[in-house]
Image 1 (spheres, rainbow, N blue to C red):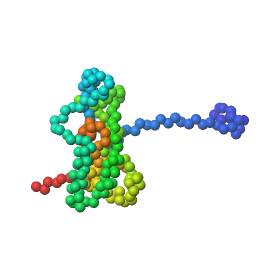
Image 2: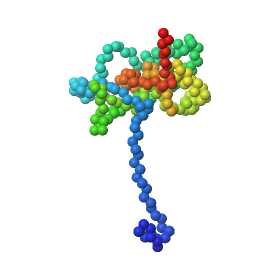
Image 3: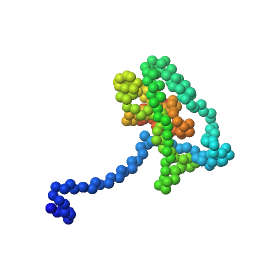
Image 4: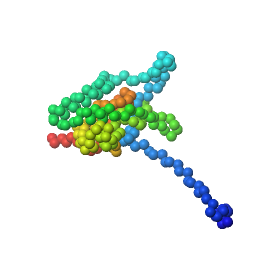
Amino acid sequence: MRPRNDVWFPRGAPIAVPQPHLVPMPRPPRPDLEPEILLPDVREYEARAQSVVGRSHRVKVRPIEQKGTRDGFTTHYDEVHRRLAQCRRQNIGINEGLLFYLLGKCDQAAAAPVLEKGGTQLKKGDFRVFRLTRVGCRVRMSQQAIADEYGCSRDQVNRQISILRREGFIVNYGHEWNEFDASLIWRGDYDLLLSYREYQTVHPLLRITIVNHT
């Protein structure tokens, strides 16, 4: 018998050492991965409309815009074809099959409310603040994964993505993700698209500086 920390243990008996309880620290959201957007606060109007039509139908209220919009997949793809036609006239070699493959791999947009410390949703004026947990024009795939799934080499994918960035198809990127111009493609809620168009960030290395020499 031998003492250990004022407790007697038989010689050779296993001693259970308590493991520390590790509590993961909350990670602050990264604005490049989960950007914030503002949506009009129409909850009062939705409640009124819902009381009229009843609970058997889902009601969605959207503010009337000053200018008419022609959004949707058709108009988006019309814009893609317009830009592709411009690249063809300039003899810019874009692999259109790979481009449409990447467009089809964009995430389905999803948003979560930004909450204050008391648990209420953060507001800015008449707008509610949301955080996009998935961006509807962003492809989250590595270049190697794209090459393996599409059936080409990684060098080809690297060259094509460089061209798409230079020609303004892809406007932002990070580690294993590329983001298209939201006017070209969007998967998800129409209201999220309208708001994100106002806040979409262009990567600093892709920005164009216009110098006035006059």
